[in-house]
Length: 388
Ligand SMILES: [Fe+2]
Image (cartoon, rainbow, N blue to C red; front, side):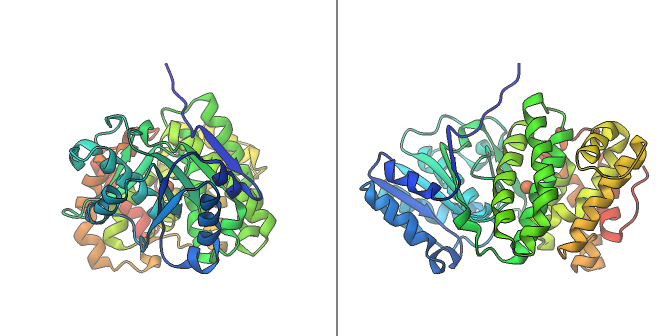
């Protein structure tokens, strides 16, 4: 038996935000990142739509970094006091993931983080509030997914919390939210979306439903990501929808080693999530090609890349990722990103070990040993071809 779960409603396109005017409820907590959503007037827009629905709002702001258990704890009091019946995550992955985690512990105050960390083990939510995701970047698809990635403040290790209870009730994907997205964010979040498409398309739990979304998303990203990066607003809108499609794919097919490695190395090396994915993707594709070369070749054909044989097509897809990184200023190695060799050597063993415990490793198409995981990190540090 398979399961496919996405938000109950997805409103998208110009003026999608207007749907907020028809919400039922009394109070909404809005969780946002830095100041940009305020400065560009979009927070005002959201609040005025909610006001038309007679919904009182409270804003939790400043979620600029990837959220930690401590940060969640710090804001729980606000939720408990205000008692919202809607929680709205507005932003890139960090504010949306933080809002999801706050939602868990607002609903279930006695739940421990250790319990919440167990995949697909959450008790029912929605006894107090429902959840809305409004993305301001194009990549994480947290507005679609059943995931919230949280760093344990005590250990510094990132853990994806995964459960279909976390799938938002409503996703509002309005292109106005990404009109002024900075170029670096377009590049990093774009490579996150590319990684979601490719990893979901080859992940062990993939299904016919997730395949169609993953490959269509990749084709759209091929056609529009670079052009969005260069400032084309029509392309930016297309990418905004493509990343949500990739989100529908990976929320149900899960991911692979690229994400395990990004989760476990991101905080220590201070590499943003999408950038880490862009770095690791080609090495993990080389590692996985012996098992899912036919799948990579299918994607390459869909993108009309060069190649007569499967091997040539896989090479072309890997080269396509490298080139896309290059065009958008995303490094192809950790060294190029600026991680010092001392820091890398100090942490690589522990990182490989931690990555083995990440739930995304279990769904990677090829079984991976701890030694191989370490070699993947080394390949991605020094830029070595993966031939094992
Ligand atoms: Fe991701």
